[in-house]
Length: 92
Image (cartoon, rainbow, N blue to C red; front, side, top):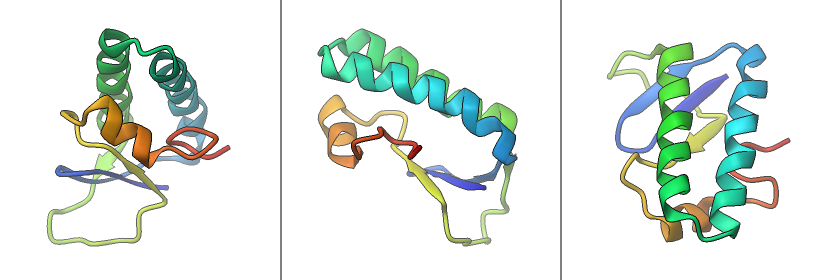
């Protein structure tokens, strides 16, 4: 799976990592619904860190279709809310 972090680049991740990312996505959704800005910041950082830790970065000159697009690390709660589907940032 190819994941894009807006403003940073793309990473290739094994499909097996979707479970870990989905747990963080569920937590992020709960914090957003509750208006927990501090929790939102912490969990967004953890989600993006997990992508960076678990994935292999694609070269800067590579432009592959992304299966998942995540917000930039400095995205606001409102900006992320606009990106959400009913399932959160990560479908499924």
